[in-house]
Length: 124
Image (cartoon, rainbow, N blue to C red; front, side):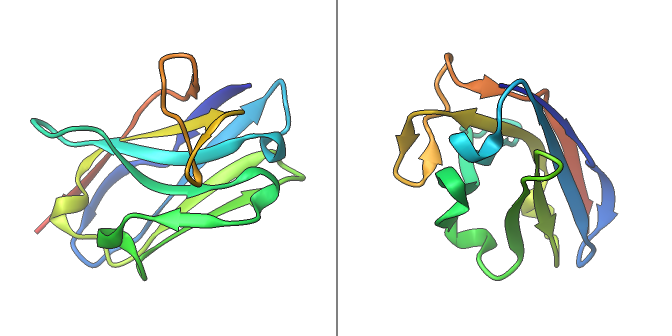
C-alpha cells in the first residue's frame, strides 16, 4: 500500500487540525494503520492507531480525549482529527500501515508502508 499524508500546518495552542492519509494500491482495512510522530531531539512515538477492519483504536495517553483516528473506507483514507492542540504536539507526523501489528498499531518497521511526513507546529 502507498500512503500520502497531508493536512499539517501552523496553529495556535487550543486550535485544531485534521491530518489525512490517502492510501492506494490496497485497502486500508487490510492493514494495521496509524499515525506516528517525531519531534526534534526526541524518539519517534506511536500517537494513534487502528486495527484491521477498524475494530479497535489506540491513543497515546497524552492525546486521549483530544485526538481521534478514523478510516473512510470508501475514500481509502485515514484521518487524525486533532483538537485542543498543545505546543508539545509539535512534530513531524507520519502515517504508517503494516499487515503485521504491534499491539493495535502497525509495527513501524522499515518494511512498513510510510507516508511522507507532514509538519505540525503549535505555537503557544
